[in-house]
Image 1 (tube, one colour):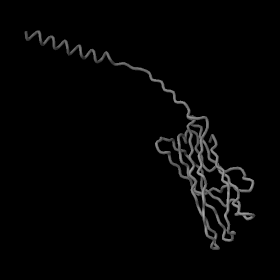
Image 2 (image 1 turned 90 degrees about the horizontal axis):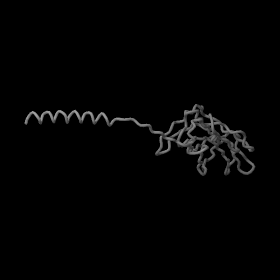
Image 3 (image 1 turned 120 degrees about the vertical axis):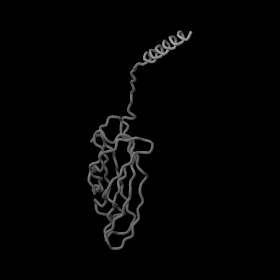
Image 4 (image 1 turned 30 degrees about the vertical axis):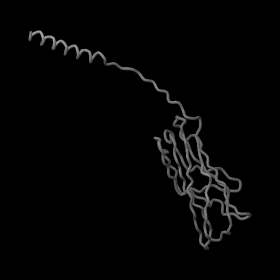
Length: 183
């Protein structure tokens, strides 16, 4: 009887090995990733309020302009940001055209997302074009091909030059920012 039990145990172990090899296999999985939209999206803050006190010297005041840029087109074709403004005016008085300068730009991926960071190659400082007619916009940020995919906050820091001989008043300027497809 001992001999019959050992033969039965050897056959059972061989059967188990054959079964585990027989269950292996491969399969194909296809996934479609559709674009999230046909165009870029740009969200602007409501505005900025600045204050300065004249003291007879040329001065500069700065503000940040956080812009939310979303590229869910899925094409990797890149995008640019442009800016223009009207001349700062108060009544019939104005600051010199070109008194706004972008001194630098920071970028951050929106929380909860994974992004392909823009590879911005624009140098600063960069004068923001300004005139009563709002001239052609200046490109101030660049996301070349294969960069800038996802949701970002792009924050330019803008300096306003106030000459020492400026008139006091509440100056206003209209800033226009655009997101443009392509590098």
